[in-house]
Image 1 (cartoon, helix red, strand yellow):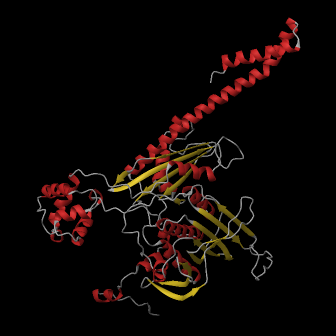
Image 2 (spheres, rainbow, N blue to C red; image 1 turned 90 degrees about the vertical axis):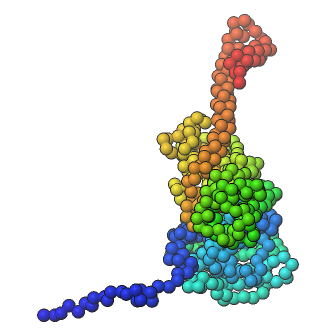
Image 3 (tube, rainbow, N blue to C red; image 1 turned 180 degrees about the vertical axis):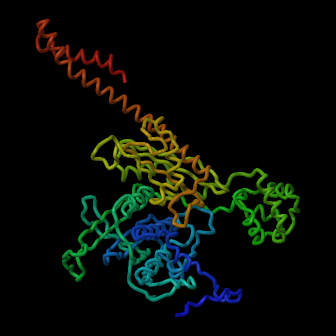
Length: 568
């Protein structure tokens, strides 16, 4: 008989298991969990890369006080490969920082700042480079020219995922300036525009281009709407599908089977006000964070730490908090024990404090929202509302709502029998995916739109030729995941969204009521115009009137009937 030769695995011991354990780099973690960052499909990978690069460019330009001009170029290099290049006219990046920004995860200047900005985590653009490196083996290519320098820096970098460190493959000085190729309104190319400083990042990756509401095209359009101060040039070139017979260009490259180019002009020439950085508000700080802040404080006394390390805490309020917690205001904050910290935390929650300052926010503004909508959405009625700032978990935020309503027309992009289009934004960034998991969707469906003149199925979006824009500005947007596609369902946030939607709804209701009255008046006027000539002709024959008298009767009848039936 043949014996079973299978070996039984030896049981692990504490020592053997210890030998197999090692530290996990953040790069390794996100490499295996890239779906968390928005790279879960080739289609979405293309969108996420463009989004992260454009966000960085806009933040850099606005912080430097520069009206942004950005070029987005997508070039298909193979059936499932694309090279994405984003160029801006920002301040540029100093040489030492280039590798860390583009090839190191969780590196940036925005995570620890409490002020409104598009980027927050320091992951996005370096994750895009890591995805390109993973799927194509290529490096991230960067050109950067700072103000006053004659030469630009050209670098090619990759990320060492084991150590989460950048690897520099190319580092040289070159002659390069940011150049944009605008497209005129008639579709013809305009004169190239050159700037003295800026940055260009180029990544080749495995991706897929698909048109539609979840495409790069839609993101670019919405970005132009919510950033009306932005000048944006978008170029897309696709290769012929397999089996096609491409020709050859002057440089030997195959001629693309499809090329699309468009420029979005800025609607306003004024930059948003620069948001100020604020300190944490004590009502938004959790116990563990409070304990760490006390340990890190440079103040000599507990009262000093409360008044200098937090916003809206005066010396009087700090003394009141210490009194409630039964702690000595002159105690060293770094030596506050755990039990004392809990008492301090409870006393903070019981003490009435002013709300955090709101100069850390830079809302779009009602006028700019309407200008952005008019620039890209063809409609007959526009309105916008910017709500007063509110607070969730100690973080100030502000909700803005805009509406564009069109007359029912089969030629219109907005369908009269379809659900309204909802555009979601957070800190001026379009959110295209995960609409069902977003607080914006809950707020829109939670409004009774029938009260404002629209049809609405139970628990669904209203029906009509309308676009709804909802924007949340905050020092820290509570996204539901690292991919930053949906806003979490905080009651304070949803309530403000509902209030903003209702304000716009009331203005829409006034417009629709006026339009219905005008339509009724036009209907009656048509009847009058139809029957008055016949009535005048009958009177002419009965009374034997001449033509001049007939015209007089027509004029008087028209005036009399309009006053009687058309009191609008």
